[in-house]
Each structure stands twice: as structure tokens, then as C-alpha cells.
Image (cartoon, rainbow, N blue to C red; front, side, top):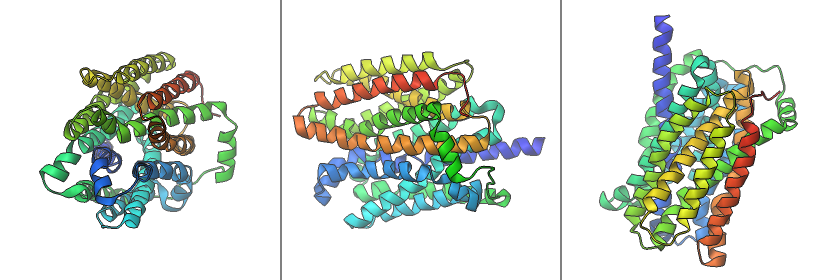
Length: 391
């Protein structure tokens, strides 16, 4: 029993380390948008792809994750994911527009596979503590995201790394995570499922609850990836310095760490999760209303409220995958479907938000777009929050 306890403690530490790596390659881009634009001459739409490409990879490869686990096993697929993540980060250092986007796509595939595997591993290894463990690893997502947002400008300008190495430095941490995971391959076995891949997709596709879990994953992700791309630009446009705007983005994600831990732990003790959904959406609408105010005086407040809502929504989206399924295989399948559909939907967010700003020349229309998305979150969360299983 002691040895098993020690094994799970070590596994938890490694999972936290992996979680720390699954956001910085994306969130570090937002504060550097202006510098990347000046250096490369890329348009706003092309720059939006630096965030959108990984999210598109989430959408395409999340649903394919069971195919990888049936060939490579869960542990083998996670090792492959970390290898792709590290390789993709390093490729972005190469001074080539094409390789910049190729590297961004590769790291997106690695993150997609890692995203899908985490809920299943938690359900298998920590069945009695899914709320707490989900809160821990999803909060670590937020910690990594916040650190990357906050240090991007200091690394690029203060330390003289330039924007390429400010993004490339994260390969060191992901490389450590890859090496740390390798001992897990000793217990790796291909995943055997009673159902075929197509049959699993067909059955999930017929479940309204599965679609609502997927929609909730999509709308909360759309708002998150839109704001990590455009919030600094919005604040800079209103007179804030680039460095301060980067730290505001870090504040948003830092506050999100707290709610990402608290909300799943609280929600796992409830019969249903409808009340938490309502609280999060109402607070998000308050934050969006605050961001419509041109003054920067209370920006820290609106950004903090938004961070709390986004962090809590993300933790809840991951918890829905675990609470709405009966076993690990079902969790992996629902995780793949919900993240595939959800992230494909979310990938449109940064592009639409940027296009609405280009079209109107003001931030009102883009923020109203996020208001509509928040209302969709309320609808999908109300349905996904009921105490039933995906069959």
C-alpha cells in the first residue's frame, strides 16, 4: 500500500509538471503580438493564426486520441505528445515564417493529445479524489499560462532574448517533463476497447448531453483564447503600456488559477453543477460590461473577475468529462469528442474578434460577440450540469 501511495504521489507530481507545459506555448504569444508584427510584417489575421492554429489542432487531433492510445498506449501517447510539444516550441526559434507556423501546428498537436489524456489518467489513478486532482492539474494549466503571459515582454525586451527565444525558452521545461514521463512507459500497454472507434463516435454523437458538454468546453475555450490574444491589444489601444498589458493578462490568468482549483473541488461535492454555472456566467457578463468602459481605472477589477470566471469554467469543463462518464474509456472518448468539437469552435474566436474590430474600428462589437458566447455558456452549462451519465 505504501509503495502504491508513493507511486501515485510521484505520478501526481509529474502530471503537475506536464500541466505546467500545456499553455505557455500559446499564452506567451499575446503580449508579443506587436513585436512579432514589426519583425515579420505579418497581418493581424496571420498573427491570429499563432493562437488559432494550436486550437485547430486541438479540434482535429483530440477526437483522434483513442486511435493513438490503441497503438501506443496511454503512457506512450503522452510521451509522444510531450516530444511533439518540445519539437514544435524549438522550431519556432528558426527565422522562417513557414517554420514558425509548422512549429505552432506541431506543438498544438502535442498539447491536444495531452489535454485529452489527463482526465482519463485522473479517473483511472485517483478515482476517489477526481474533484481535487482535477482542480490541482487544471489550476497548474493556469499557473503556466499566467507565468508565460507575464514574462514574455521582460524576456524579449528586458533580457534581450527577442520574441523568438522568449517563446523558445519553454522547450527547456517541456523537455524536462518529457524525460520525467519516460519511466511511466514501463507499465505502458495498448488500450483495448470493446467498441470500435467509429462506433464510439456514433454513440457519443447521438447523446445530447455529450454535445452540451462539448459546447460548454467550446464556449469557455473561445472566450479564453480570444482574450489571451486580444486583451493586451485592447488595453494598449486605450493607453496602457505593452509591459503593463502583459501583466494584466498574467493577472487574469493568475486569478483564474484560484477558481480553477476551487470550482471543481466545490462542484464535485454537489449533486448537480447548475448553480456554479449561473454564478460564473453572471460574473462574466459583469466583467464584459466593465471592459466596455473606455477608462483604464478599474481594468484590474474587470480583468480579475474575468480571470475567476474563465478559470472556474475551464475546471468545470474538465470536471464535466469525469462526472458525466462511468469509466476511464468513456472519459477518454467524451474527452476526445468534447475537446475536438469544443476547440474547433473555439478556434474561430480570435479571428472573429479581430475581424469585428477591423470592421468597426472599435471594441464594442467584439465584446458584444463575447456576451453572446457567455449566454451560450449558460445554456450548455445548465444542461451539462445535471446529475446524469452519458450513455
